[in-house]
Length: 189
Image (cartoon, rainbow, N blue to C red; front, top):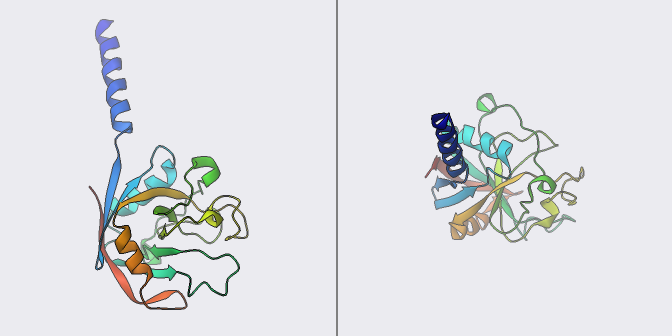
């Protein structure tokens, strides 16, 4: 009986320690490295999806391909500042995931937050974006997307915001970088 109790106690302690460990990833790009911390406790579905792509090395040789900034957003009513990456060929994409809204997770689109790109709710696959400055219109109830569901934030940049801002300033045509920034790989660290 005591052995069983001890095993349960050890497992519970181990599980608690493991579940509280930080999950960190490094996005290695042609412009420099960007480190992010993933919030698996708040956005487990979104983090698991992202890690499926990371662990399968599907982000290898993808890119940051789109930028939104003051210049190319000037004609939009609801303006945002982000860089978007993770373009993976459709045949390699995993099935779309259910959206974990900011209302559910509490992770708001603040400066440095990483979130999943999508067209409609429950359509996010591989593409993600990084916020530059606070972007409340991307949160649940925000007006950037007409459905009001916002986007699924799941991580935060811990190192490399200078690189993110540098990417955002790249030359673009209709928000698409004329020279995309190569993502060599994304790896757990």
